Figure 1: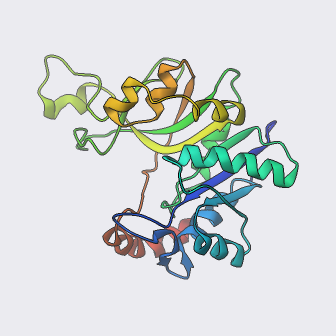
Figure 2 (figure 1 turned 90 degrees about the vertical axis):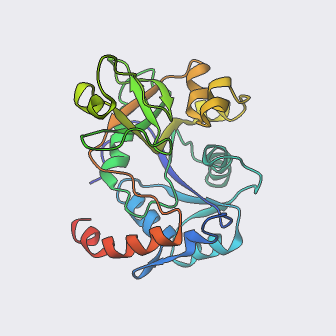
Length: 260
């Protein structure tokens, strides 16, 4: 069941064909559907309005062929956030509707759960929230030292203070293997929601020092004073970056389809 809401939400799924590690992955087949259709179908379980934003006609045609909605965007975007911003403007111009909040759904996560999207939507029940993202509690014996898995620290309101590829905070007077037992660490998952008015601003900001240092765009938003509310999910983010990941996803498919 889709939650009651006072805002008009739109789910936008950025999808590129070009990929150094896995060209054409949105069109990879998982079971009986392409990856992009699986992401789209999962998003539609939580949202009334869902679009794929792509720069490739093959992806666009595939989405239209299964009955989905899609818009063609520039091939020059540096991030999914930038592509979402253009797509939101195109959708509003095309439909004549107002989108209050955009949810950026990763196009390579076919196992995204509707509950995770709803968690992001609920973040905007609080006034003053500019953006929202998902985090997950790290539990022992998980490795917190992998720089490819960004970490985040939050304040008492649940707003993000800083994102880092390093382990934050540093746990003094404890061996590194015991840090997870001494402090609650949070892993960041790359699912975002933005007020549309904020989205149009943050994509025009120049790259910030902390963003450049960490190669994490969300630090630019914090440096410029935007409030990022976090929501804690118990589910891991499962992205498909390589053909090897695709084979693993196929093995997970039957069990996932049973519960979703």
